[in-house]
Length: 400
Image (tube, rainbow, N blue to C red):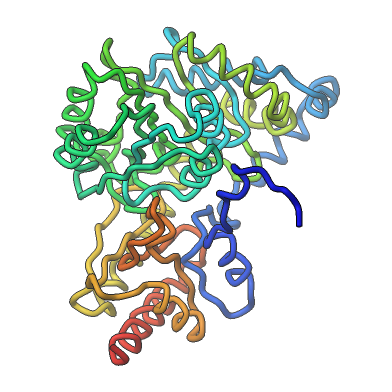
């Protein structure tokens, strides 16, 4: 037997990762992976960018880069974020190896074993895994259609033995809940945090994948309107708007927090991949990002519409869901006594797979929900896959 560290002993295999093995099996319709569709990647544009790079720039792409990020990418990304209203001039920007590394860096900066983190329930499984790895005590607060439940949050914090180090939220096109925080809920949250000295981590990986102008207006980052008495650490990603294989994200924070973040990143991986940073910079600097995002929004909006239509067509009346206005996900709710893991086993046998609800519960308990991702499969598989899942729910219900 090996003497593993206490932090490693906290880790458990991700249900999503385990299901990915099933997702690649022939004949399985997968609504499990929260990833872009392979046929939508900008292969032609990236080929063109690389082939037209001067030799010296190609050579530099193969080399190590500075820890904060490839300088031209930092410049072009600042321009991209500033166009959204983000305060890039008064904050510092760090390129990270995916937005999950940004969450990891912030957790390492602030969390000692036993420190309290407030999360939403449900919450992003990647963040939950990071928080567990640092032996944080997670306290979750439910979300509704407008965002995190402020009344529940207040009561939660009032009864905690110590003040939480930070609150982690995903306000735009939530993974997995599919919701977008209302403007009123954002203001309520920031007003409440005004005198609490609790950091807010705003994870915004899906910000650019809105389906209409109303959703675009709703999805304005809270960091854009950061009050003087609230500290917001903002994370974003190229994974959903360019490709997960680029392994690039970013972190926008004030200078004091940034100084430690850069040191932590240096110890983690020295620098994010320079090769993909060079390509991402050209994609931004040449303005290719904007028509590509228009294309993605149209594609994912069509998939969302098709899944919503199929859910209305096939699902039993007792299954409820929020229709997302951006992002990748539907979050479906079953009666309280239903077990989505058992339904998932039936669905896999019948030819479709999803992710059960307890995967996104920080306590790993609540399991009468499930997540459907419409982003990855072919459009012509959506109707068939939803019917398989609906039939599997009926099959499960008959055995109760």
